[in-house]
Length: 368
Image (cartoon, rainbow, N blue to C red; front, top):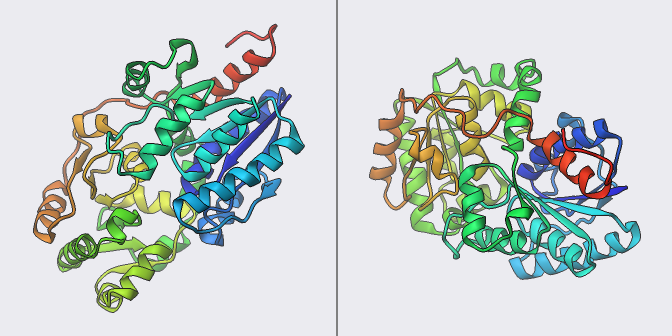
């Protein structure tokens, strides 16, 4: 049997790694890896394949940056060509990017079985391109692998058949458990920056809703620079964020006040996350990674898909409209903890996903 994996962005590489290892262990599927090229420089792409120990993509479509419509359209066309050539039994897509939607649409139109990993998440904000991608992908998919009970409930409320939904846990938790020891051995960057455990805040800012809005951008970086008067703030700098900081004339001040690094590989990022005293982010995945490492988080957005993190005290959502509110939220979170709960399964999501898929195409196979 043949399985095609479609990925295109950093979080998807991380999510796909445990599933890819489980596919190899099962020996039931031949996996074909398709990288759309949505993230295309080494620090945002190939370094992750190296660190995570997954195969170099069989296809790199090289789509690159474009408007949402143009990028998705090019991906759809290119993925369709691959699927016609490979003729797979199943296509697996991850998360909520344009690569996710393009892979699901291409497979659906060719009547290929579609599996969506990280199904059922909802921010209930249709202004977010990611939200549109999630909803459309879920309703085009044949198997929906939900990470939480909340995600399952979202799907049921939208009328998705229960037979298509399987709560498996979160594959990103699988990845953290699998790579934690390896990350601890990757200390070169940590030592170079000269940081001590618990002595700094880690920040990541990249979403267009923040970077492309001058008022929000100024509020976020104004607050981070003020916070940095009292505690080090480390910021791996996303290319989009660097470009807009340069454009708005903020880069020199930010560079002077914050500890900037290039975009990091997964292992270095994990090391910085688990040793920080707080994480401030607009990323979806980093919110969860903060919780996995039991580090308090401030999410600089208007809402979050991961509402259970807020409910259990591990995350606070702060709309980035003023540097005063952002600064107060960050300062108030340092030293706090949330509830002692396990929210994302037991670290065996990937094996459940592969067991289910094998069972769909091998009648004699029984779920473990």
